[in-house]
Length: 258
Image (cartoon, one colour):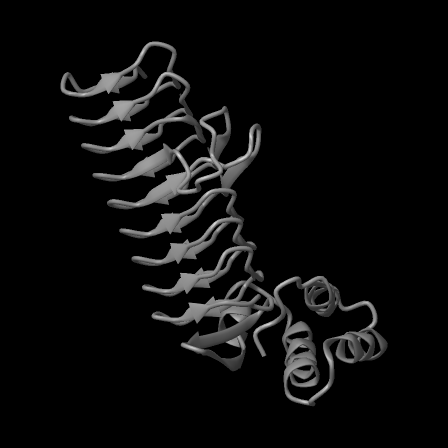
């Protein structure tokens, strides 16, 4: 299969396009870009900077990826944006390079970034993450695998969002969101374990029940984080999901949303 570049597109010398790539009209591909096999790029997109797109991705109309970070410290030196495989980036999404020389903004595989979402410099987005319409991620945000961030949500810089968590639309997130939980609002309010999502992803009933009890201990019993983490490890030895929750809580720099 041959690569197909529309006559109205502009691919600068030095760009590397894989097998069976499509580039739509009005799109601009910069000289340091690498695009994986079978990736489809729609019309009027901009792929620039030191950007690496994995295989089987889709970029829709007007997406801008690899542009300089919106950070006054950026000195124009080489830094990166990496996108995994099979990720879909919808209309007018923006994703920036990292700020520091040699650093990377990462978006994982099998993700969906809906229209008008923004991924700022040095963000780390895991695999199978859904970032809904107009979500705004500030710099250095980390989102673990399988998380869902509802539309219009704004996330403060350096915040971490745990795996399999679900954030309702229109939320303001100034602190870390623990794995496996649901929350929404401004300020955000907790709504229990994401039990339906966990069951759909094949978690054992015993694991979901253990997480529900761990949730009550960490968020409802009035304990300090340190005391709650110690009790989690005492009561749920060998439950990997609870250990991940405990480790996430004890390493929170911005504090947990509680």
